[in-house]
Image (cartoon, rainbow, N blue to C red; front, side):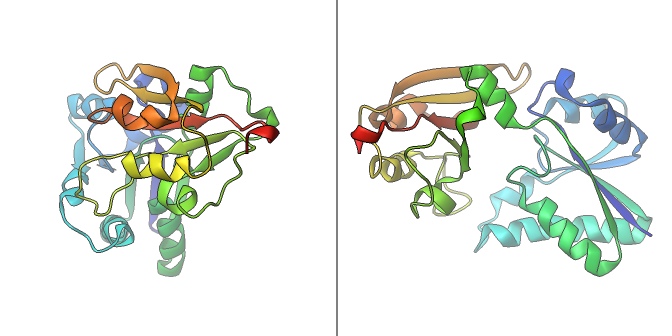
Amino acid sequence: MPTISVVGLGPGPLSLLTKEAEQELLRAPKVFFRTNKYPAYDWLRSLGKTLVAFDGVYSFRWPHADQMYGFMVDALLKEATNTGSAVYALPGDPHILELTTTLLRERGRAAGIEVKVVAGLSFIEIALNAIEVDAGDGLQIVLPRRHVARGLFSPHLAMLVCQIEAKLHLTDPPSVDQTAAWLLNAYPPDHAVTLIWTSGLPAYDVERKRFALADLEREYGEGRYFSSLFVPPLARDDD
């Protein structure tokens, strides 16, 4: 049976790549990457591996994001069918906010292709460690358009807003003004939030900054790599 291995690369640094993921990547003669802006890509390239990155796919104006991810899935299914296997590497953990993993499982099953997932360390652990927060009291993991815009959250429970840029089109520049506007419908302007991001290549150091929610657009600036926003809960007498 043809197989596809979906490998989680973790939050960036090679030191956070799991041993299982490392072995899977080293065994593969060819690796597909969702993005080449990751230390593991340069590492494998230095070893002479054949690498294919999907970065160019993001430059097209797709009618819907699902079609873009469907294109990636089509390529992986075709590779597995033609060669017997495919290895697909992506940031973080394949089960955290990753539509291609879900599509591969669904369509792989229908096509008679086994899909194996190699877990990775997700951004959630890294973010909580950076702000020294224990999720024991509850934590919501949300996306701006899918959850915040529709009010699918509770302001009385801590929340981590992921992929905080809300775009009308996939090729639009990153922007958080709409995300801020949606959040301000539920929180006061002076509500303290914490922005968490990485410095990107080569170090991928985690950075953070605390400020008032009303200042989100100004503090975000021109965009930051893999940004999340921690929003603490409102006190019951704040609403």
